Picture 1 (cartoon, rainbow, N blue to C red):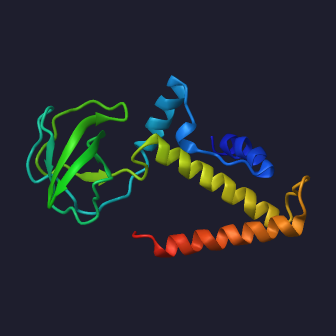
Picture 2 (picture 1 turned 120 degrees about the vertical axis):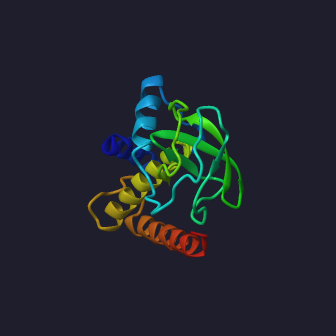
Length: 174
């Protein structure tokens, strides 16, 4: 899938087209495959567990530590994805059964983790960013030529974009 996405956006990079990931759509099977992949991409929270059981309809998750869980996080407990709608200390209000999963019963002390990609939009944005980054690296290294532009101009634009990205990352709250 990585190569397919790269080649789909390689032409866009040469044409210097602006891509809006929120405008991308996936077929039903593409969405299901993407959701299945997203469920495997976890942040690896260490030692975070439920402090009380959850039945299949409970919409609050009481967790042992919420330090690394934000209101924008997507929880994953026993294979069920949950969208956080509110965070108050260690009590998380959630929407159950997200990303094609089913709400199920969770025992006290069940392991809690968060997903790296809380939405398909975030996942697709990451794919676009990674593909464009790879494309820029190839042009900058001289492994790929831009047939419609001056190489020096393109390399300068790429270096400027990389510097802006590094500046944005260094100022971002992690």
